[in-house]
Image (cartoon, rainbow, N blue to C red; front, side, top):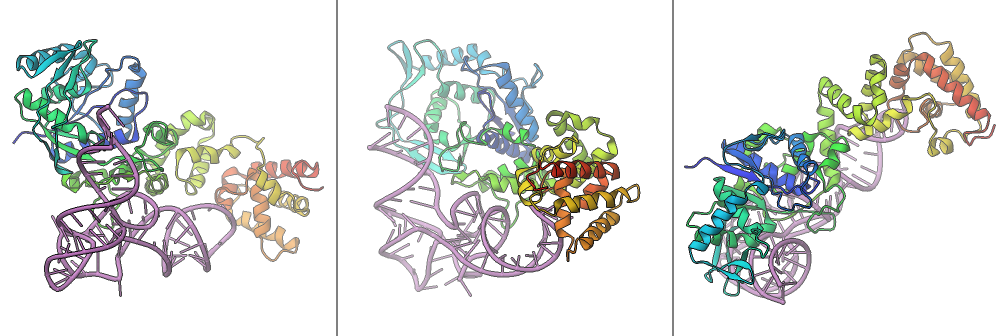
Length: 453
RNA sequence: GGCGCUGUCGUCUAGAGGCCUAGGACAGGUCCCUUUCAAGGACCAUACACGGGUUCGAAUCCCGUCAGCGCCA
């Protein structure tokens, strides 16, 4: 039995489509499950869009998802494997050779400058590993243009030639190609070779229920990297679209998925992309991260989005990251939640002004809090922070410290929501807390927070 | 329009004739916990597209209809 060889053959369009990423993933999973070879081939025949940047997007996306390939461009200008070149733009002579070969069979003819392949009129049967035997009636099927007037070979032809030349044993691709597959098979047969096996996987649909297109939100894999999702979470989610590990299981390690993945378990129906579920899965992975993993992730993620963070004292930075982490689940949120603590000149949100600073008592409480924290011990402890709040509340005649606590949060961060407050106060440290309370109190007294002084 | 694929809760799915008064998860709702927000716990609601068969028995098999998607025009 031949060793399994599968391939992912994207076009450099400037983004790695989420559906393409899933196709790549399923090919990769099958290759790894079977101990086969995963080939990356770049279908860069559209010269107008074919740029180095666009090709790099593919490499970057694949690496981000952890989909390593055994053959293809290595992504650094080199090449792996001996079935190259792996760029279609460099395979012109191979296509010419096969065009000649096909012409020699007498199954082609010229028509208006184009070269056409005589489609057999017999029924075309695709033995698909996912869809079963699919039969196409070809009595009405027009002949297939395989070389255009301008001399360029057509997609269906080069695709077949490449898969043939590269020894691909299983073509795993989107179901949108199913209807054309009988043409490919006819070409293989005309060339006198056995076609590979086919497995057409269901499509990923957008919210509206049609094929996810580049225009759809979140259609590009890069979107999730930028939003600070964890690649393992995205990968896990993508696995669940069209494949299921069985009942009542969803979060699985990639090793476990590789172990269980099989073509016969693939679904036949299209799946809608559900960003909310991905978000939830990301949260699961987010919380499962080990501390050192999180530290590494945060450093890399923040290096781009919030370079100022790197300059923070290590204790302060780590403390902040720690208290924020438990409330959120993406790198983007991490950056945003960090903002109030990166400057002493932080803004006050609309909500804070409306809910907290409009309280006529606010000034009094802020003064009391400021005084309380000024006379607290150094370093500040959570217990003491809580004690200060309780005391201020009591003196204000409040049955519970909740109101004071909410005001305090808005005062030191400008926001009504945020990290666990007492933890946060300890991380900020006594002097910052006092300074922030003073700033807020003064602004409040000046009537700049929407409150009435 | 022709051809093809598909059709289980809003969404992703489990289900391969009796285990199904259809299970899980996300989302939604209620409650608990609670300093916000998360997390967590408890509970609720919601589905076998429709119509015919086959069978003692069908979500599971067959046929038709409809719908969605895709491909080719």
